[in-house]
Image 1: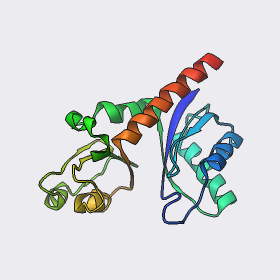
Image 2: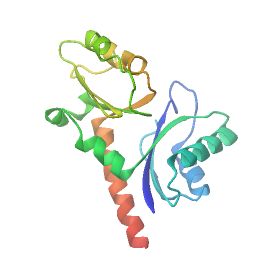
Image 3: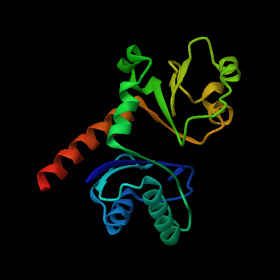
Length: 187
């Protein structure tokens, strides 16, 4: 069994792409996934499954949502070890004490030609960022609501991403550890 983390983007935002987390749990269970848990209504799910092909599993999840709810969400699927690496690779460990100011933008792939110079021009005096493989780390002490860097990152990186604050990242990791433990106990 593999523990997966599914990060949905654009679900339940602005009254669009409505998908209750209870319904998402049921949908994932109906696909044969186990130990399904969700976190906050914007779309984070942790589950175990036997399928090792993440692309195939992502397509199954998106296809089932499209069939039942009429929209195809953007989903990034990571296994537990990949998600753990997101935490371990954090270049701003001192920012962890204020977890809502630290963000991990999980990218679909490593950007082949990221516009790092252009990103540098967008950042405020207090903001810091670092691209580590397929994760765009952003420390924004004043928040990301008005951050030009946060709003321009995906476009300048040239790769789709979904962003989570550090509090959410840590909560999802806790869920993944618990799910893995439960799956091992079930045998």
